[in-house]
Amino acid sequence: MVSPKQHLAPANMANFVIGIIGMGDMGKMYARRLSEAGWRVNACDRQEKYQSLCEEFADRKQIKILSNGHLVSRASDYILYNVEAASIGKVVAEYGPSTKQNAIVGGQTSCKAPEIAAFEEYLPEDVEIVSCHSLHGPNVDPRGQPLVLIKHRASQESFKKVEHVLSCLGSKHVYLSATQHDRITADTQAVTHAAFLSMGKAWHANSQFPWEIARYVGGIENVKINLTLRIYAQKWHVYAGLAILNPYAKEQIRQYAQSVTELYKLMLGGHKEELEERILKAGASVFGTRGWDGELLLKDEVLDRFSLGKKPETPLPNNHLSLLAMVDCWSQLGIVPYDHMICSTPLFRLWLGVTEYLFRKPSLLQDVIRIAIEDNTFRSDDLEFTFAARGWSDCVRFGNFESWKDRFQSTQKFFEPRFADATKVGNEMMRTILENIEK
Image (cartoon, rainbow, N blue to C red; front, side, top):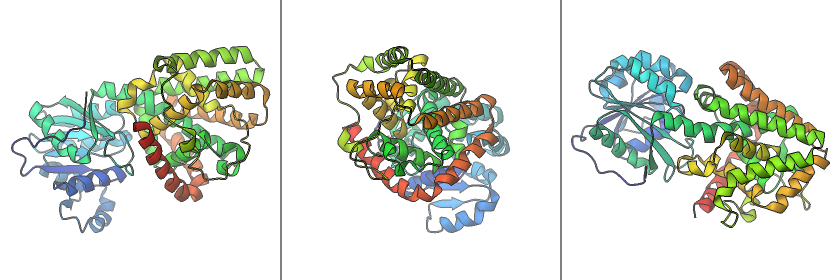
């Protein structure tokens, strides 16, 4: 299923040309990496970006900026669509019929159901389909990260050509069908993003910069803050498309909102025994398969190194509703997150690490349950978090991109002044923690 090997060049690739339609952050990263490996790249974006792209890539002789997707499609042997998942149908409908005879076409969207449907409807029958998905953001080094390859409608020879081209990224190749891809990304990314999006929305609703509040500094809180800001520093459509268009994501995000709501009601009602029973049962379901003696993915000394604020001498209590609800959600859906580690994003690995950190420390977990029942200090924070989780779930349920965009961008604007600091700290945190996880 997985291969990190560099693939030997198949025959007849001396004049092979790569086409990239969509030069957003990910498209640019691919163009640069492929050109540095010696491949000739034709690329385009919307007409109004033509001049600025020509100027940006003027020193890259291997990259030729063309004015539209028709020209890229006619002149390239492997055409990769790097466009928003919500726009893939419209873009392929426009440029797909111009595809070079016997070329190979793929997409880099995070949701494959609409992508494959568009390819099947609008591409000529002689065109082969090999899609991919790099499971990381454009600013993450692709070396060692999972790269999903989907052989949908292609000969083995054509598939090997794509493998060889993309081997220059240094990623670990994961071989899935489009359906398997969407199922796994829903189980991992969709719910993970929902948790961070909800935290950011709750802090925004309370006009809180969490790194300025002692409760949110140190240990697990550093991961929560840095990764939440990392998500809100990105473009809104990256997360909207995955959540709204993925046919499997709706159930996961709905369940997360339901888990948040039900656990919060147990806290409000003071139902300690019922809360404890539910949480321990969920923990056994999710983490019991690994046993309790193995090493933790994350350790205290690593977690405490990356903070945007000053850690208090005596940390304030936190019931970690976001983490409890995540494990409850996984349990309710029968998801064992370790099963998806080979196809996981850096965000997911860190989120799994902090949930495991909480659930595999019995004394810490018992303290969290006690705080959830006895401490009312931060009930308003938890209320806003519950509202936020349900709000994101409603966006997904109704398929409302505009509502998602408005919710995302308003909170993005609130946190924007700290993105530069958060990105610097967050990048170093991710690099260090992921290295620690992979040892």
